[in-house]
Amino acid sequence: MNKGFCEECNSLVEYEVKEINDSIEIKGKKYNYKRLIGYCKNCGEEISSSEINDENLNRIDKVYRNEENIITTEKINKILNKYKIGKKPLSKLLGWGEITLIRYLNGDVPSKVYSEQLYNILNNEDYMSKLIEENKGLITERAYNNVKETIRKLKEKTFECSIEKEIDIIAKYIIAIGKEITPLALQKILYYAQGFYKAFFGKFLFEEDCQAWVHGPVFVDIYEKYKEFKSANIFIDIDYDIEDMIVDEKREILDAVIKYFGYYNGKALEKMSHYETPWINARKGLLPTENSNNIINKEDIKEYFEKVKSKYDMLNVLDIKKYSDDQFKRVIEI
Ligand SMILES: [Zn+2]
Image 1 (cartoon, protein in one colour):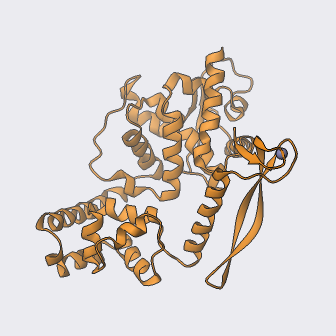
Image 2 (spheres, rainbow, N blue to C red; image 1 turned 60 degrees about the horizontal axis):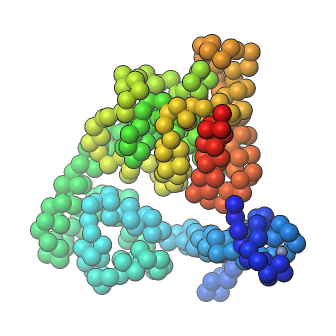
Image 3 (spheres, rainbow, N blue to C red; image 1 turned 180 degrees about the vertical axis):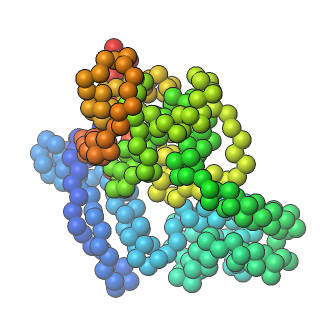
């Protein structure tokens, strides 16, 4: 439960969150954003909460970087992962001070010119190739070889992935990041990720429909792919950097769902899904053990998870935990 300090009540209180349109001036320019305000559930006065303050600062930072097209710290981290290069060597390659990049990773906002350079590196492997060739002398031979080899693999991988579907890549990501994922758990994590992604970002994570099987929602193609593992953990070799294949926004949801649902075993997750309307609706008129290929309506999924998001006052994806905690309690109460 969210708690904040109410001056009127002079105590920590539960609060309700509302969103208002607000703007802030930075260097003489106005930026519009949606600001969160918490109201005391006892007296209705505005409360102060560090959780809300942090989220508002986050939003301002996001809006500013978005409008000015300034790279985010997340994307800078992505560069380091993508090319397997350290902060200092990259800073040097760019001809910057050794700790410049570290400052950006700690939240400092880069200038437009610097930001553009970073974008270029992130999005263009040829640009990075050129950069390491031209500035070879500035980094160690080992760092140089590492980056070079990584770029070679990246290009190979781009080709491999151009023939894979989004849902396949996402399933692999869940298996790689989640560790100890059984086929049953994989299905449920895909399902929750699909629902919460829609609720948070207004789009579906992938286009495939799922069916309302006896054991919960199932994406059939993925089921076919991994069924040989039965109730054991899935083990596959993923020889490319799966993290780079999925956009940040999607990874945000996936990571949260993996963290808060992947923790439970497939059976618990199956039971959770049996309390949820999309699956229930799709199985109307069926006996509990009756097989069915009924499609779970995407509109039902959308509606259900939007309701969950608002019922649990979810401010950001980490709040998904509130729901998984609650669902698990229901599962063990029976
Ligand atoms: Zn109060």
